[in-house]
Length: 257
Image (cartoon, rainbow, N blue to C red):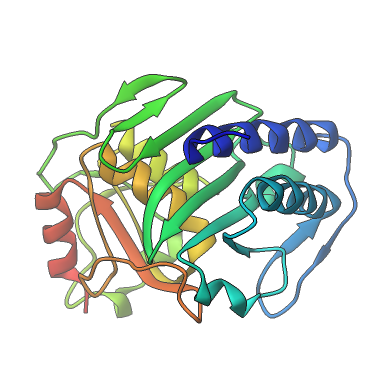
């Protein structure tokens, strides 16, 4: 048995990636989950089942929170919980694009301690352990230092342009997009973009791993209310998220209504 949680997460993510690539660009069966939750595919479910078995066998005393599994409230009585998105960016995956990821994190008393985000079609593995920095394919990464909001390169969906979200006008940023929230956070951690934001309730499994990878690379990560996100909540949602260097995050928060 692997003693180190991060090693366990890395192995699990690579196994998940092998399953995803078996279905990738091969028209997997999928259906809509309803209630605006988007699609789920047979690949999502096979990965989810594998991860539950693999991780539970290794850490039987850990809770388990996954996008594709029934919400097990017993996780609220455990010190450590796996927080998992088998495929973050399922639409991208179904469309044959590369920007999808498996996202796995371990939360201890609501704080993320270990995290992996793996993009198998790109062979990119981001990981972090609290207090030890963030890596991409084993090489240390660091967030950018741009503090100028004018023209800042921010990953966000088009809906963030809605004027109702802002006190006056939207911030004067240069908006970019990637379908996976986990990947957006990793790109900020890598310094390829200045920040990311999503100003709507966000499921924990979409952002848990990316959150730690961002902070360990030198970013600040806040909810849209300016608070530190907490994980393994009874209702596993975060009130939006903004990430980037601390000065830029403060400037973005200043625009929010």
